[in-house]
Length: 371
Image (cartoon, rainbow, N blue to C red):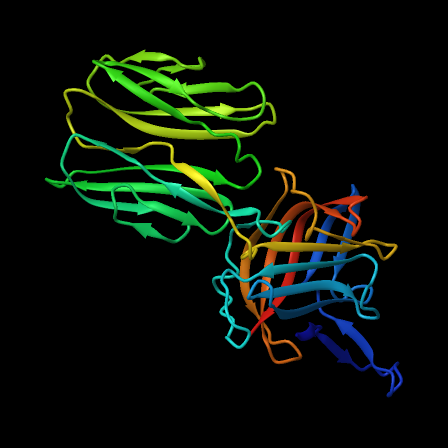
């Protein structure tokens, strides 16, 4: 284990100070955790009240993967009260002797909060295109996570929970171009609210088959793309003119979650090309090595450790998200570090799982090390 701390202190001397008693002046805090524990405010900052940002990385033999740790605690003790530790597991397995390439491990994205090792934290998704009005030549899928495909009906695996903008563009014979973009959520708060529908067309009339999901009674807001709308669950709509129309459905549930999905319909005779796709089918994948998962630990004022590592499933509203990633200074051990801006909410249990704390952090900057 390589353990070190990041602690920048500038020593200034004054004519009023003793020569052997320098006055430490600490720069504005870089690392911090601001939020609540069980509704009580916490504001921990490195360089204030003896708090320091410790960072280390260790090789977890049971998972064959590196863990990157950041701990904000006081300098004077190892198991300090009111301290926070965040552990981010690498996105891939490796041997203990391999270098750790952290760029892919720390991305601006949602991460699963680790509970038991086999929880689903990755997602296989099948996309099914719906085309018309021309002969397709070039397919371009952008999955919203930095990857693409040139297949007509691709399958894609998302390595993280998240909200992804999926854009599908098709170039047709003769040069016609058309595209469609939707946002899909997987494994994040509100992901169970989904606007799903399938239109069937007879002449100029479209009938909606609504398969939307969500908590409790759902409300619907349809936009048929010609200025008409409906709040019915399974409406029917007739178009006056032929052409291509984008139909959008917005669904809201009793927990105030909202989902939107749009797709296109072609009212014959066609006048141009049309690119659309069905709501994708997704399947959660077990992740026994907990790759790219996050473990959060909080030590309370009495020295009791609360953790996410072996507790029951987190609530649907719980999440962990990296908002920004920056290279930072080397630590005292000479290892490279990164500065992560993060936001999270979780429920942590004690070792006997008899009590828990609810941790909500809306403003945090932590450090992690890698080699």
